[in-house]
Image 1 (cartoon, rainbow, N blue to C red):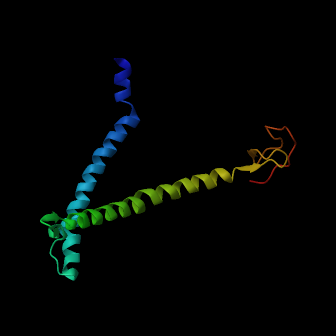
Image 2: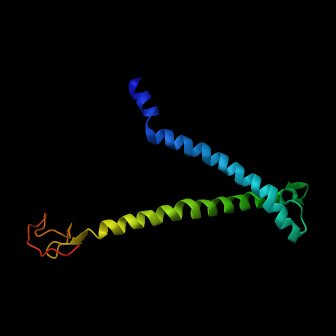
Image 3: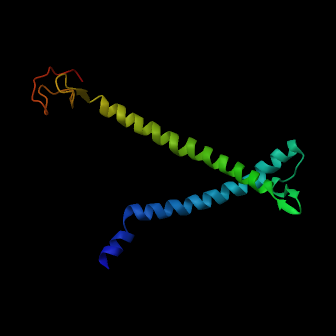
Length: 134
């Protein structure tokens, strides 16, 4: 029972649960924003007050494509927000860390393994190398 309790209280599991809840609430927020502001704004130019009410019929079957248009707009807004405010900053931060780490190492001219720029001997092949200025 202690192992199960430890599993439930692990940091990653709790963080994932919080992220799922926040993501769901954020999706509801974007959907409400889309239906309340974006759709009516687009409706001004298209002459349609709400896309959610649009449909077409074939042999008495009703196809409400307007709800899909609202959902598509919500998806695009959510994806854009996530990309520009989460993915892009995270990628830039990872790139900066990689450049900083790369500047501290170099390639051994004999075995091509990564060694410190200050190294005078390769740890892998034990060849002597000239240190580079940092």
